[in-house]
Image (cartoon, rainbow, N blue to C red; front, top):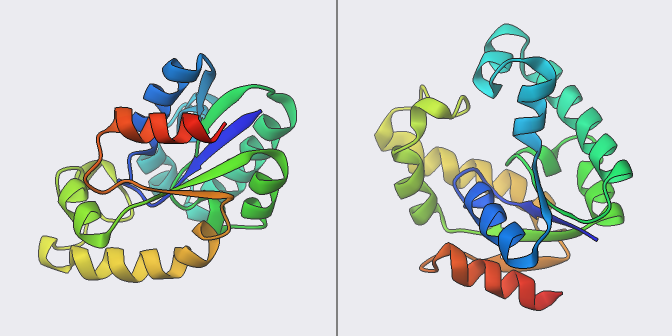
Length: 169
């Protein structure tokens, strides 16, 4: 069984996936790290040097490879992964998808501290960030809502969220 964590950037996918993989004794695969390892560049570097289209194609290629070859793991996906190609359908076909649902307020609080590491928001003025996140989240909600399970993350610690996910299986 593959458990795929999806959600907007800042929803806690990376942190929760680490806790969950330990709790369930499953291998952890982070798609963004796999992209980095295969390309020898960070995600911001890929965006800058090769562009978003290249990144999304590489993301799709590695997503497909992982979903077709791995058996038992936790797969942490990028925030945009479900919104491109037919990725969400593939994710649901080959794994148990979990949407880590987080409010715009919580996302804004978290992402203000991480802006420079996030290419999509690095140049957005702080005061415009909530509006950007709200609109972006609205656009992606169509894809996120297709997940097989939804877990609310606001006001919860990663251990409790991981326990809630583990209890589903």
